[in-house]
Amino acid sequence: MPEPTAPTGHPSPSERPRASDGPTGSATSADHLGTGLRTRHLTMMGLGSAIGAGLFLGSGVGIATAGPAVLVSYAIAGVVVILVMRMLAEMASARPASGSFSVYAEEALGPWAGFLLGWLYWFMLVMVLGAEITGAARIVTGWYPDVPQWGVALVVVVVFAVINLWGVRQFGELEFWFAFVKVAAIVGFLVVGVLLVLGLLPGTDPVGTSNLLGHGGFAPEGWGGIAAGLLVVVFAFGGIEIVTIAAAEAREPRTAVARATRSIVWRILVFYLGSVAIMVLVLPWDSPLLAESPFVAVLDLAGLQGAARVMEVVVVIALLSAFNANVYGTSRMAYSLAGRGDGPRALRRVSRRDVPWVSVLVSVFFALVAVGLNWLLPEALLGILLNAVGAALLVVWVLVAVSQLRLRRRIEAGARASGEPLTLRMWGFPWLTWAVLAGLAALAVLMLTDDAARAQLVSTAGLVVVILALYAVTRGGRARRVASAETRRDA
Image 1: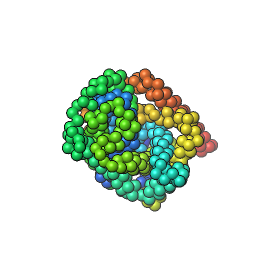
Image 2 (image 1 turned 135 degrees about the vertical axis):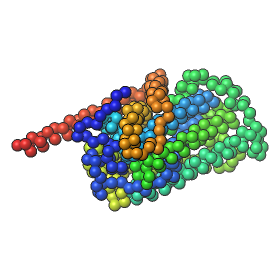
Image 3 (image 1 turned 60 degrees about the horizontal axis):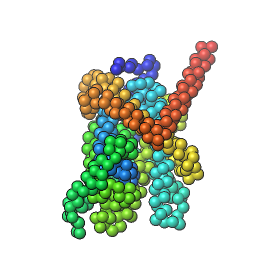
Image 4 (image 1 turned 90 degrees about the horizontal axis):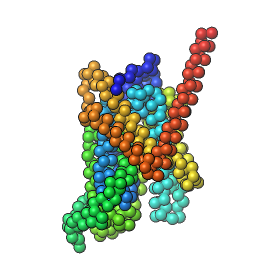
């Protein structure tokens, strides 16, 4: 694939200062971001973002769809996500930017790609924010029926708005401990699960392979079930990309993102595959208990009292952690887009704590709008909007792979010129990158065969068209304003 050259008069995004993504290539004291995040923050942030409600609640759906063979679905999805993350981390460690993949897409493919990827990702996370608030509020009101859901949602929004406005170091510290709780819960579950499988808990016997291979076999639904399971689980890994967004605010971004990525990828596979393997070993795959609440079902079988309430607390923490991280992600993406002329200039305003406070408040406001839609129009407009973001990650991953394919040699040339070797490289370049693109194309074809997934794919395609239309309108208006100003100056 030929190497593109940067358009005349349009500075390469990578040439802009770290954590500013400004359109002019110079940061000012009024709009630069802080550098308070450390490697441990990035590592736990990546783990916490990928270990969310999708694992705690969605794994049961995957098991019911594919049976024990959902392990194959998780393995395939995990490998694809790890390879995409490796590509993204290669670019982020060489050229940290608060807009991350949006900046890289702009450099590799042109301004349209940066605009599309940035606003698509922003819209996706805003819709997810609304779902996360609603999910947490419903669980909390189950504990305290006299408290209205809107009250819980409002408290959550205010608290996390304050945390995100306080400073990036405070955000990173809270996210670290949120993620720590989730990781500790998974590790505890794995320990209990292994003891249960081996029959080492009081009143238990080794489970053997009767559940894994019985009840229709390892793959009771055949390859079709594995494919359907892949559609259920593949997007559960979404969220890990926030590490590369946060890298721009790390003290040593080049080394921090490399270290965080290396430690994240294998842990995620262990946590996901290990947890699901225990579930299908100790209970029949078609058990309604697994479909309803898989973690609680296993812990109840182990004789742990209060398992349901403990897991409810963990799920709430997972939702709050995801909300916190997504407020951060949306605000930094909006900040970056504004810096490249793809959003209102007000989104660039930074507080004395080096936080893009306008971008944070805008993200929080639209999250509240999404909550309102969730309660007012659960079956109408909200369903359409959620469908529209259902396959957005697929678009993000495809453009990440294409960007890495086009930028790799340019990044290597820059590293040789600067005398700083790349701290992280994509494996098997370019063949593995092409293999990932082929796999994502196959996933898109697979989505077309499923009614629900096809609706998401079509809705996302419609959203992409709308964003590109907005790009054409805004760019056209900007060109006319520039031409008019030049005409007046010449006159």
